[in-house]
Length: 189
Image (tube, rainbow, N blue to C red; front, side):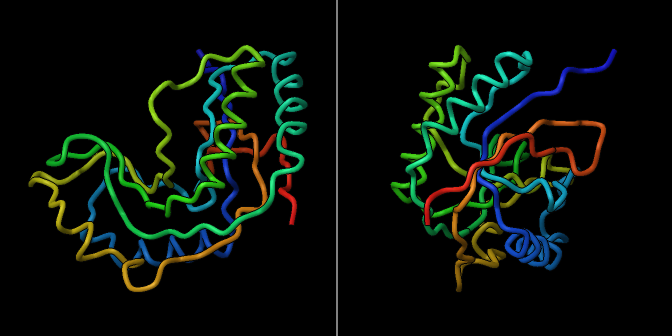
């Protein structure tokens, strides 16, 4: 049985920044032996995960979100570090940390509230912006949290980029890259 695609709103990361993240990860991959690495074209920062969506809901939420963010301004963001989710000895998710800027949280709140108003049931945990880089620790020995600092390629110089667009992505889990852009909205310069 074919799985239904899921949809989510996210910050689009510029291609040159995706490539730089990928290049940096290539250097440190031997230290971080995760089983599944995310394709560089799938790097993003999720704003709201919608799950499965019917066509009417899709059109409606695209229109509502586009309208809700039309006056939102572009802003700068930085990739500053590395971290993990899950048990420290065997993490589930390896991710890139971004600096905490108010504009990102405001943008996420607008998208989140708009999706709720459109009838979606969304995540209730506090928002924690990140870029998923890999999944599932794959080594027999325990993960070492200190490696997140000692092998952080962004510790000396954070990787800056402008957040200028949000995208509604559709997941195609059998494909690589997995995420397809369905709608995109530019932020005001």
